[in-house]
Image (cartoon, rainbow, N blue to C red; front, side, top):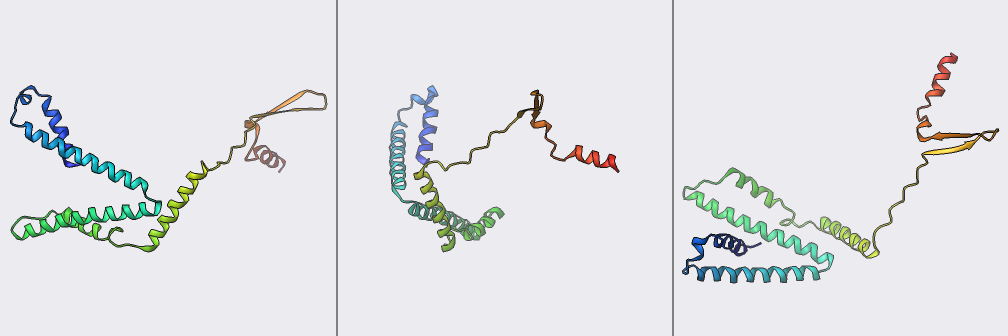
Length: 178
């Protein structure tokens, strides 16, 4: 959401107040804000349509360039702040620390190997989406109980709990035998 969309939201909230609704001089400003907000919405819609029309490889490159441009704008603001520091205005320590992270960011230092890896990953995802959901292995149905019959034909039920994974009965018999 852009600056003018935020301004439009603030304007709409302010117009709910009855005192502000009667001010006619501000109508020109309100109209200008609405026009700019509509232009921002159109621009965002066009950018979204363009992004959806890209291939997976182009989407990766588009995101990288967008992130790089954003970080360059931030560096420009830090440069202005540093220039202001020469005139006596201080620079925050966190801002200076962020310069290092921006400069070390992948979008400013392009790595071909990471780009190829992202490209392979995105093409695999695209192929899976085209093929449909990947087949998950079905769980084997658990047998919670089994019924066996002895020589006389009487049923003997054994349950999942009857299974002795640690062979405690066998160990007990061995201890008793010794």
